[in-house]
Figure 1 (spheres, rainbow, N blue to C red):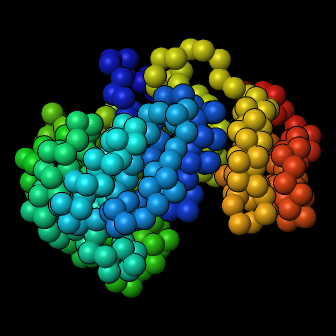
Figure 2: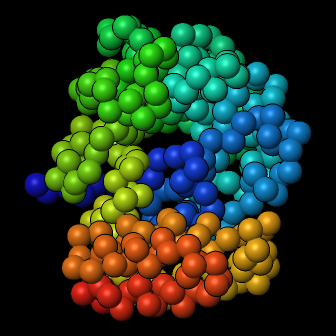
Length: 338
């Protein structure tokens, strides 16, 4: 189908915040594949920012822009402080997590359970909006537990919008707070994309981005005929080179995309600089801390299994020699093609 050629929203395509996955190494890798797709950090709690090592939690590479900081918390004052520090650190957006269903997050009284307290979320958003000049956005589910009425998410979005939030990232599944693991919460509750579509119809002035189970270009195109943006999750991680056409197709940037080989070579100086700075002794940085995010680069190509095996070889990784990337790539056919 033909993609609408009107003005492209800046968040038309984005990669979801994913715990233990979308760290700064992963985001820099993704940025070698797509220049314009929005990238999000893993969720960082307000406590970690207020009481922890700021550099450890907030450092990122300037190449990552546009990049958003996702916060976890439920105290308006703490969120305001954390949001301000994120803005000062250089992030382009502050995102509030109202979608994570894990028990650990629930014990902290934030994540998906916040959907049951829309006034508190509104207070949190207002506090952050008052503290920063950059956008404050909310990522949420469409319901919690057995609350499946569209009215629930409509009223939630309406109340938060009144507090000054103009961008909503809708993971189009319910969050089951008891009885399902986070993995099961990504797979078992049925997807209801029409809820996101209805939100856009009911709140045309808001920017509505849909997330959840989206894997293919035709699916992205279909969603973009109903909402403002699409956020990819695990597909972007496991099959990252899918994003190589995003800049041209969705942002009108017709400059040549990097081949897989060029992406890999672009990562080598970064890997070398990181190892030089932090070492490879396990106390600072392991080579695998970066290369693990690259396992899907050759997804679908002949030789991809061998590529993954080399990059998962503990003895080779222990050497700390980035040249194993070149060794792995030599096993793959058509790595030079876009």
